[in-house]
Image 1 (cartoon, helix red, strand yellow):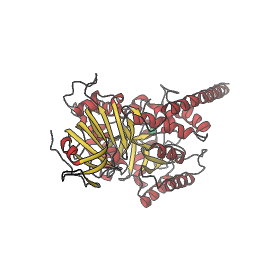
Image 2 (image 1 turned 135 degrees about the horizontal axis):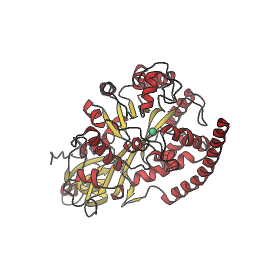
Image 3 (image 1 turned 90 degrees about the vertical axis):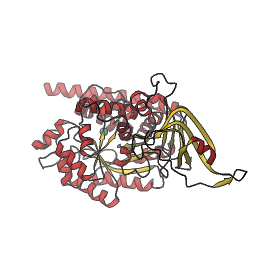
Image 4 (image 1 turned 30 degrees about the vertical axis):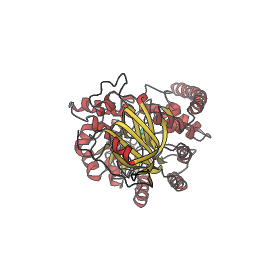
Length: 491
Ligand SMILES: [Zn+2]
C-alpha cells in the first residue's frame, strides 16, 4: 500500500462528549473497507478508513477507529465490503439526447446527425419540458451509476440548470453555440449571450458551473471561435467542444474542401485544431471531446497549452469514428478525461463502463498491456474530468477541504467482483454500475443503498416513454419526407 495520507479535520463545532473527551459534531461519517481517494496519487488505497462529511465538505479522511473516537455524526454509514471513492465525472454528454436512446443505431455520424438527431431536435428541442425531461432521465441514470458531475452540451441550458438545481448534482452546463439558427437562438452572438445570461441567473447555485460550448469546427465559423476565445479570456470559463472526431473532418479541412459537410467552417486549409489554435482556443481552458484523429503534433500542441481531451470510447466505436491514441495522449502529457457522449450514440451514460473500455482499448490500440492501468483509468473517470473544467480544487478526488462528492461501490460479497485481491482493479475491471450503493454530491446523499432518493425515478421514466411516442410519430414523418425527396431526385 502506498503511504497513508491521514488528513486531520479542521474540527467543526466541538461538543463535550462527557469524561473530558470532546468530539466534533459532523453530518456524516462513512466507514469503508477501502477508501480510494485518487490523491495524492491515483493508486492510493486506504484500508478500514472513514470519510467525514460536514455540510458540503470533506472534513477528514482517517482510520475508522480514530473517526469513531473523534467525531459525533448525525448519520453514520458502515460499508464493510465497499470502496468509497470520488464521484465519477462524465466529462462529455448531451443530456437531452437521452430521450433519443436507441432511436437511430448502426449508422454513420453524419447520417445520424442529419437524418435523425437534427430533425427530431428541430421538432422538439424547444417543446416545453423536452430538455429538462431529458436531463432528468440522464441524471437518474448517472446518479445510479455513481456519477456526481457531468459536463453537458445541449439546447436551452437554463431549463437544464433548473432541473440540475432541483436534483442537486454538480454540472458544467454548456453555453451552446452553433452556426445555424434554431428555436433557441438566431445568431452566434445571441446563442452566447443567452448562455451567459443563464450562467448569471443561476450564479447562486454552487453545484452549477458553466462552459462555452461551440459545437464543432464543422458547424462554427472562425469569427464565432474568436468571439468565444475573447469571452473565455474575459470570464475564465472553460471551452467545451468536439474536435477531430472523424477522419473526414481532418481530411476535408486540410484539403480546404468546403463542399464537404465535415470541413471546418474556415477558409484556412489546415487541421481543425491548428485553426483553433490560430483563433486563440487551444489553451488550458479547452476541453476537446474525442480527438480520435490526433497527430503527434496535435498532442504536443495540446500538452504545451495545457488543454484537455475528453475520450469517449463507446461513442467512437459505435459511430466507427476510429480508435483514439489514448496511450500516446497520456505519454505526451495531455490531461485525458472520460465521457459517455450522448445516450443516442452509446447507448448509456455509464462512466464506470467507459473507464473499463477506455483502459482496455488503450492497451489494444497501443499494443502495450501496461498502458492505462486501473488507477490511471480511475483518474480519467474522476480527477482528470475535474481538471478539464477547472474544477480540480473542488472535486475529483477525496481531499480534506474539497466538496463532498463521494461514490460508494460494493465489491465484497458481489458475484462478479469477488475475490477482491486489489480494490482498484475490482472497481475498474470487475464492478458494474449496479454495484453502486451510495452517492453524495456537495455533501447531500442523492443515492442511498442503491436507490436514487433525489428523484422520483418512475415519474421520470414515464415522461421518457411519453416522449418516445411523440418522437416515433415525428420520425415517421421525417422518413416519409426523405423518401419523397429521394424519389423526386431520382425522377
Ligand atoms: Zn458529443
